Image (cartoon, rainbow, N blue to C red):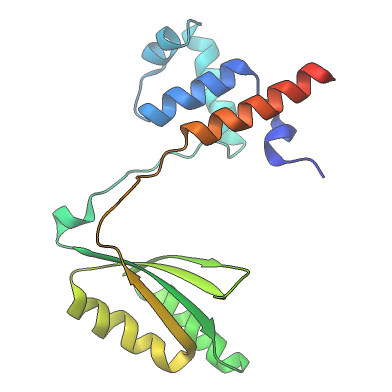
Length: 170
């Protein structure tokens, strides 16, 4: 089964563009062309193609603490028994704005939930208490310090090495 990246046949220029975008997602095509030693129109076509294929998505990174939300947490949980409880759990996930991401997992927890709240009291009253009756266990980890921020450059280089090497062997 081919991976999604292999399907799009990225080359060294594409990977160089991606790495530069990781540094600055707001870079102009003109500056991106300079950094990659290529033509601005070619850069424009390549970026637009990667956006169209879903490889690149542009988003904003917001510092929520500057907006009064000082508590971030991960919650591991499982659904209670029965479809009605499962639906109620999904309703809490969907309708609570402090729940910003939910991933279904394989392992000790059925779901891993990312939460951003104003403080512990806000977290407890608006997240923990509503989740308790619709789950069969909650394991909460409040984030006290960010040890490593998201850094995708090494992963991108690994993907590049793997995919470029595979092309060279073909």
